[in-house]
Image (cartoon, rainbow, N blue to C red):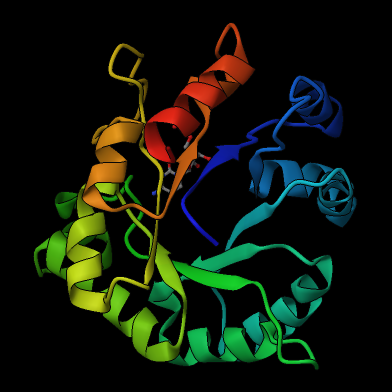
Length: 232
Ligand code: C5P
């Protein structure tokens, strides 16, 4: 899979999601389905979006004991998504078990990527609540390397970290990066942002873009602008 723009479909219902996706009559965007939509509509929403011809990143961020995650992944593998994920904080053993569960009998599987530290976690909350006292950049890189060693395909990270992750984990280790905004757009609650063109320059493999597309007056034009800046 090459560079692509993944549209975060952060909607509360299938109805809203399809009203949005129906606007795309040309290229079918790569779609991210998160917890809100999945918990509202269940596996059927994944199957329906797949049947419409979209690639899917199922963003459920699993984190539990290895055996439970392995079994959950062996259910998710039947949904035939393209990318799914988990928390690297679940340990290397959990990530290895996840890969086993995700791998189908014929040896194929969706790509599996890890969340390192959430972008909502900062140095202060990491030290206070998690008792992790190393610098957060070092923690993110360590989690990325652990995910690499466990056999995962990449991580979710800030576009600002994508270059460093490639330097330390290799060019083929995928960086999937949210926190993308147009130069002339609203930042909202994202703190550390980059434009699609900057994310391309720094080497992100996939950008995850939500509100700059979903809340745009013309979502198709906003999507096409992202693709033009990031992919072309
Ligand atoms: O609307 P916006 O472009 O900010 O959406 C970004 C998407 O990426 C949301 O679905 C958000 O949950 C997700 N995300 C993020 N930061 C992370 C991990 C996921 O913004 N570290």
